[in-house]
Image (cartoon, rainbow, N blue to C red; front, side):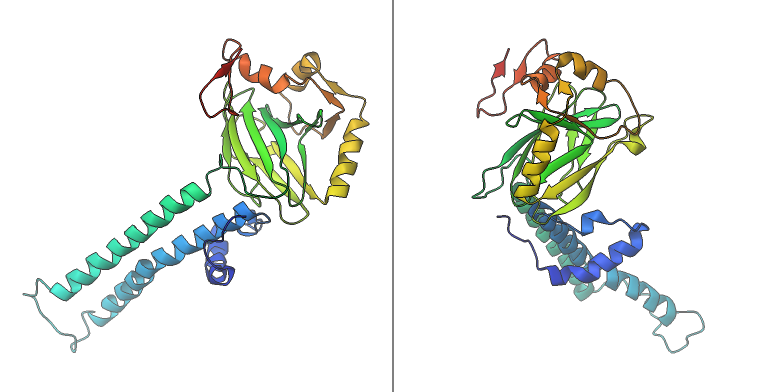
Amino acid sequence: MIRRITGGARAAPVIAILAGLAGCNDLHVLDPKGAVGVAEKSLIATATWTMLIVVVPVILLTLFFAWRYRASNRNATYAPNWSHSTAIEVVIWSVPTMIILYLGILTWRTTHELDPYKPLESAVKPIDVEVVALDWKWLFIYPELGIASVNQLAIPVGTPVNFRITSDSVMNSFFIPQLGSQVYAMAGMQTRLHLIADEAGDYAGVSANYSGRGFSDMKFRTLAEPREQFDAWVQKVKASSDRLDMTAYSTVAQPSEKAPVRYFSTVDPKLFHNIIAKYNDGHVLDLKDAACTTKG
């Protein structure tokens, strides 16, 4: 589906180093559960290993020179008139140049491979989810199922998920660390993201962009479940007595902190469209078409 950039075994020492530097226990980015997250972790490991080719020798040589040429060491060569070495110049310029060239090629290639707007290749039909960032909660709309939820996202394992993301407040950022790729949410605009969960689990979702007083609690859970459990979750949502039309939405959109999970058995089919359109004089850019067209 998505090629791994490097082998997982090579990443282990780097992960240990990053874990020590991070200073926290929940290193979700380094414990991916989806193909996109795995590819991004491999990219981090590869880039870190490559940079260490320069960083480690420089640190070691700095310590060595400080010890070797200390004032008390009378055995060290004293060459006050030394000024040039072709061999040294070749090394200190060629090695960084090759590393920069390699990282440039790697970045260009992986930037295209991991483009969040690029659909994932899969034999399984994807599901669509519309995401709305509010103050200070997340609204998830399932247009094909006609349901919605607040602060809880459920997806079937092994199924690509096509996200369309917007904000009905200040700029925000949608991020599920263990699945990969954070993407910004902006009022009057819609961004896209394609993810997949390869393992069942309960994964943290966060707001990755400061958005005011309730930012620290603007979190949600992502339930990656086998198809049978996902279908059961859908039925549970459809059993809810709450319905999400424009009137109910105006209440849901009011600022609130630590909002509980809520389910809506029906949703206005044009809700996501209307949320974007109200910032654009009723027009919405149609991302489904290759050409840039608008819908009134």
